[in-house]
Length: 540
Image (cartoon, rainbow, N blue to C red; front, top):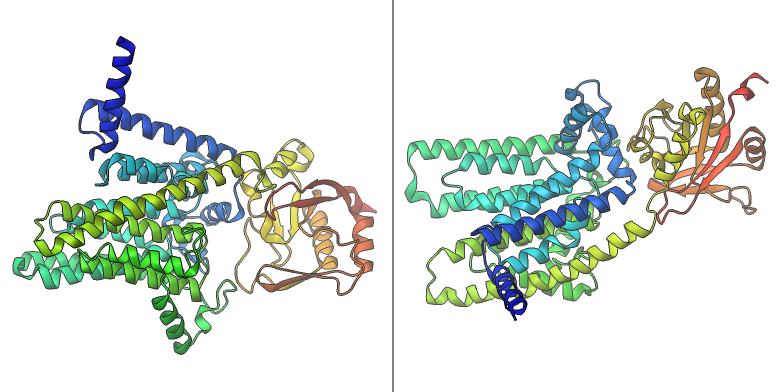
């Protein structure tokens, strides 16, 4: 009976915790919250250690480390399409620990910071906070996959926490917006929307509170935000030499047409975060989420603007994968955080009660349903990461590190971009035949030539073997070349680049190299066939 009594008491305490709105209001809540966050962190670290890094994850680290000085980052980021903050974090972190593992450490720590801010300060009940942090974005996509998007989650949640204190702490809100604008382009769009919202609030609702000192402080705050956005734009704006996007070639008519499409269909691009829904259902869901904020009309307008503008970005600049679409969902959660918190502390007139009911319905029903779906998505991706190989780069790296001879080898490859994940695991020098230079990442410009032949690839290896006096590993991501009988002998890869060969070139390649290993178990396309161009063949 005593055991049953204790069990029921603990059960009652836990149910009370789930229904409470304060993660650390008493000792029991603090203990449970600490355990939940610790469990989240342990599980994420475990999955992260099993995760094979992907090429665009390592590419950021390679770019961050290439310049001789930290100031060289500004030049290195030209045509990269991302602002500077993530690269700055990686550069400084590497200076401290001198290891490529900083990529995973930084990603997990930043995402954990965002989760802690949400779990401690969000106004939603604890059961809903637990659902959220177990979702695919905070539990997998942003901490485990090491990209800059976890920083956006952290700063969007910091913004949600401090936005209601913008009158007392305008400079803090301004600097949060500056940091957010320099994480990625999507977040810079959100910053423009939030800054516009803030400005309207100041001009329309706060004019009676104006005095000279306050005008100066607010003006400085908006100037700071403006400088941050302009800096982000200057850093990320592509040139005509870019091969990633053709956005600069669009005319006004095309832009307006795409804008109108996104206005009519705000759910058009959000196929992953609203997985399983038809285009019509996605539109309806997005309109419901917008309507849920109508108790604060400016917030509803802000959500609409953010969704439409990011949708426009997806239409004309770069498509939205889970990580990109997820930022829109984090933006939605942040706006609901702000509105829910403001609504709970503000007297409500009778007319607004119906709007508050709509807000609560959106929070407790719609958001919770999405959280549950996202938990299922997290489980699926985590399972895939644990039991399957997402990239063969780790296995290839372990193979190289097991041989002192290969640790000194020069590596060249085709397609060249599939080797960009390798520098996380090995320190071998990588030569890029399409550009004629040693570098750990490829240029996303026309400097990376559009056509390459097998003869040119082999000749690059021979020249390197002579000039560097080291063995050369030629890594092919094209399979079955010798077996292909039908012309043309051409493979088309990313950004419409071509790799071609002739029967004579294949014979020469086969006679000059020795196939030493294949790495083909990857779920994705980072698979490699490795050929050795031995050092002694240079002396024949």
